[in-house]
Image (cartoon, rainbow, N blue to C red; front, side, top):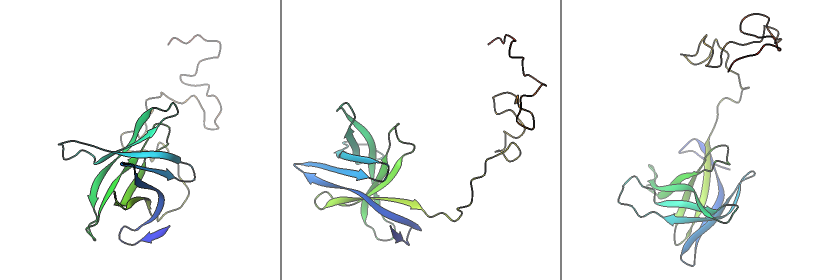
Length: 168
C-alpha cells in the first residue's frame, strides 16, 4: 500500500480493466474477493446523476448481472478525471468502494482505499446506559430480559414456566 497524503488514506491497486474487442473487461481480486470476469457497460442517460458505467459480471448460472456502478469524478488537487463507485452484491458483507484511474485507451487501474484509523483500541459493546439516545432504559422492542444479574433464568417478571402454554 502506498500512502496518499492528499486524502490521509492508503491506496492499493486491486485490479485492472482493459479494452478488448470493443469491450472494457477486467478483474478485481483481494484476499477474500475474486471477481475474474467483470465488464464496464456504458450508461446512456440524459440524467446528470446517472453513472457513467455499470459494472457487470456473470453469476453462478452464467447470467449477466449488475454488481456495481461508476461515476466520473475530478480530483480536487490535480484536476485528474477518474471513475469512482462501488462493487456490491448481497453475498458480500459490505460494498467495496473503488476508483479507476487511467483511460479507456490506456486501460484502468482499480484502486481501493480505506481511511487510516487513529484508534485501534478494543471494540466496546454498547450497554443500555450508553446506548444511543431514544433507546436508553427501554427494551429495544424485544421485551424485558428473562435473565437475572448472573445470566440465569429469572424467576420474576414475564418468565413463564417451561410447561406453561404461551399464546402467540
